[in-house]
Length: 230
Image (tube, rainbow, N blue to C red; front, side, top):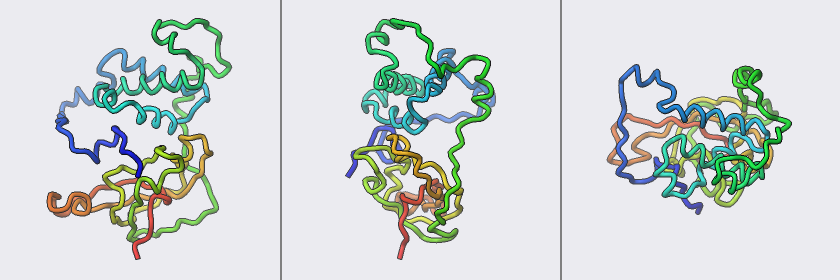
């Protein structure tokens, strides 16, 4: 069984209180601190170097030590994961991070130049793919999510299936077509695209007698996360 990672908060008991707000001014504020915008910019610029992909970037954040993950703010997690990726791919050194300055300033051949940033962001990174494989499940079909360990392609690797939703019965609500499989992509094992489904899991299936009657959780799950209910 794969060890649960700290990012999977839906599957752990926790005393953290999440305070929501109805303030439109707060919702309209994209960055709450000036350095948040810089953290996002640096992450996008580093990603443009082509050494890793979006799923590898997510996995780097998931792999932060549990104590750090719980303590760090949202963009602190981004910067910590980015630093680990930069060091792993030999783009910077630990010494440079500690010093806060580069030992050399040689430009990278894929450097994201200011004049092309808008086009790059506008184009995004589409993950939908055309494949010959026919979808296994039809809308309305009853399925069960697999155990986390049965979705992994790498031991203790990346998956987008939440731990709290593993091993639960669900109903197929929609199929979004084929999308890149993060479980493979995060570990540089190719795109391995497969059908992506919208599934509904009843709150009672997830939380038993503590659930509110009629409530349900909607998730997107890749086909390899699911099995038919006989």
